[in-house]
Length: 344
Image 1 (tube, rainbow, N blue to C red):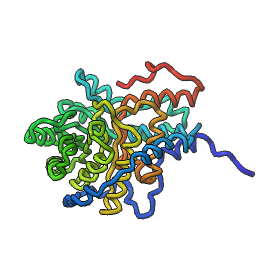
Image 2: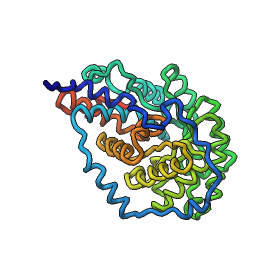
Image 3: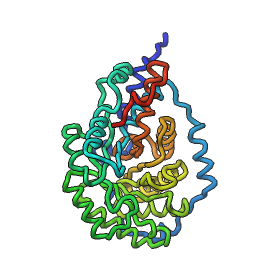
């Protein structure tokens, strides 16, 4: 006689850690990418078939259909991969503290009870703020295990003097930031000055010390997908722990064709060096369904090991409210008003 697996078991199974793929370092034992000498021949030989990439990206949301309990589980997993972020000109200490409270408890308790996962550690991967709020966030998150990430190097344009940018990184690390999201000088990519880009990112990596370096390429301001692939390779050769699509301030931010190019650059780098580099799409991801598309893309292109917070992040705070609405719909059969799921 066959039995049907309870829906709560299916939900929990999609949140819990996947088995480690054979030969892949488990969470907590992943060595940092040390980088490598700049190989200009590898950069110049980079090729991207744009039409093929766009065709593949267009199939991601149509090839997989994730429904019911499986969808609820994947949406909860997406929350655990999220960098909850506030990067507005009107940010205040109070807003940052409220954001940190949301980071600790991103989903209402009654929904977690109804889903059967109230005993699971559902929290976001990190909280990302401007440097001036790093200390506030560190204090608000004390004891939670949630790291603070700071945007640095003249975010979002990245055009401050180099001395100022390095000092900003060092100040954020001194205040307790465990992750630094830097922005590159896009003109280095647009003019093909790969040595300057490599030297810049390498200097940022050294200034970070033990803090992990997430390198924002600003892909919406790069000329071609080929330049996106080249910049990705240079950033990894310079020692980036993550490569990230956007600041969220460009006219075009995280889109799946760019994500495919960057994911494949990560795969090429691992095959060449043996080191694992993370990926963070950021900006423009607002709907719960979009998170499923990105997770499916990562699973297909890089495998289950990239479905954990040490190798994949969402820079998509506004998406959290929609995920909560979808979870409430799964539990009750009704969509709730947005004000029932405040972000901060």
